[in-house]
Image (cartoon, rainbow over all chains, first blue to last red; front, side, top):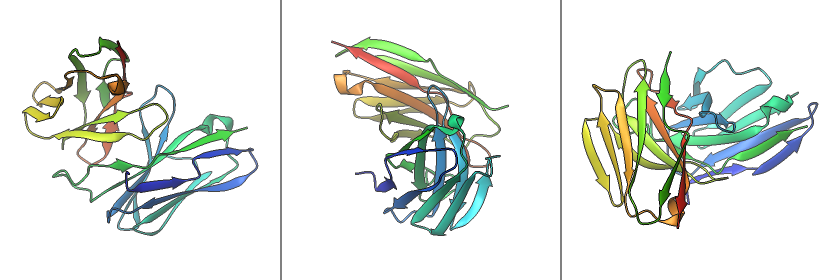
Length: 116
Length: 109
C-alpha cells in the first residue's frame, strides 16, 4: 500500500476529448508532483505543488492543466492531446521540499494513457 | 546541462551479487535516491544518501562519493523478484529530482 492512489489506471482517448486524471495521497504530505514516463526515458517532471501552490512548471504544453484544490488531491486536466502524449503519468507526494530527506517521493500506481 | 548516467541493462544470476552504477553531473547536490520499479508498477523508494559512504539496508546497500559524482546500488543474494528497473535520481540545488533513465536488471536462475 503506497498511500498514493491514482484513477483511472488506464485511459484511452481521442485527440479531441477532454479528460482528467486524479491523484490522492493519504500520507499527510505537503508537496505533490506530476510526472510523465515514456519508455526508456528518464522521468519527466511536469508540475510541482507545495502547500497547494504551484512551484514548478517545466515548460509543459498548455493542453495539460494541473489543479490542486487541497494538499491531498491533485488533478491533471487533459484536452486536445497528441499521440506523442501517450505515456504513463505518475503522481507522487513528499513530506516537504527542501532537503534533509523530506523530499523522498512516494508514487502512485500511474495512469497508462493512450491517445488515438 | 544536468545529466544522470546509468547502464541500460544488466544481467545477473539468482543468489549472486550485482552492483549498479550511477554517475551524475548536476547543478548542486542535496542528496541521491535509488528507486525500484517493476514493470507496469510505480517506482518504490529504496535508499537516500546525502553524505559520503555506504548505507546498508538488508540485502540492499547504497554508496555515495560526492567528490566523484558517483553512486552505486549493491544487491546481494539476488532473488527472482529483484528483476526490475532501478532508477537513480539526484536532488539538485532547486530541490528538484533529476532522474536517470533506469537500469533494467534481469535475474536468471
